[in-house]
Image (cartoon, rainbow, N blue to C red):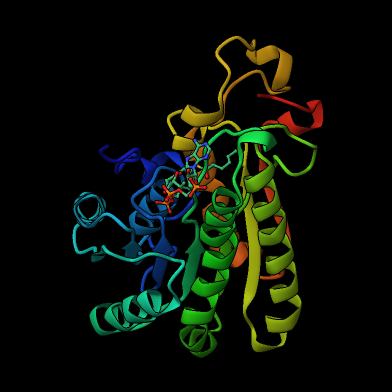
Length: 270
Ligand code: HXC
């Protein structure tokens, strides 16, 4: 896939280059599109990273490409991890701490999706998506919590906006992402006294992502469903992510940051 961002991000974005120097981010789904650009931004701004995925080659290749963005950066690609299996994440945490020393930030972004109406959606298909998106997010927190406690770190879940309305063809993902929002909110309350923040980012239609490729409807006019009159860019997600992990958001927890040009207010965008 190649990187979305390059070194020009350091001079054209609002952020200072060493913002995350010394920090380590742990990312499930980091070889995908949304979580990948989130990782790229954090690495460009000084962090080291571990990215996890099911596919070994895809994950290792993405890690090398992200690492090449900044001289001195360390990005570890850990393949063969299925977030439905908490033990596989525990092992990845051990590898991360061994290689990078600590975990400050966690992005729980591994997700599965396909379009299906209710009549064609089997119980097992529903369970698969709930298990990847919701149980997988829970497992990611469970496995990283001992490290986050030490660093008073921050969690970021990748949610969506499709459960704000009764969006057809997305019953499974809508239910899972509603659960992810609830998980994040409750963690913000329960882990706040430990100094751990928990937020969600809810991307809308972001060009060049798997979600957009799967869900977009080529027959819809942008102006009919996106008030800002453009698709989202992957950099929009990167910038919101940087904000939520930055000291500028040190009092921001238990929020869901919607990055969608106000599209969900229009309603059904499929
Ligand atoms: C109906 C389907 C289906 C489809 C799979 N199933 N695809 N049902 N329509 N298109 C059913 C299968 O028939 C099976 O049910 C059950 O789902 C499990 O399928 P498996 O292939 O065995 O599961 P698994 O290998 O675990 O795959 C999980 C998956 C798959 C979610 C189904 O798509 C996947 O791994 N995706 C990962 C990558 C991905 O989706 N990325 C997109 C992220 S974008 P039966 O009954 O036959 O056993 C994203 C955007 C969110 O999340 C929202 C943005 C706005």
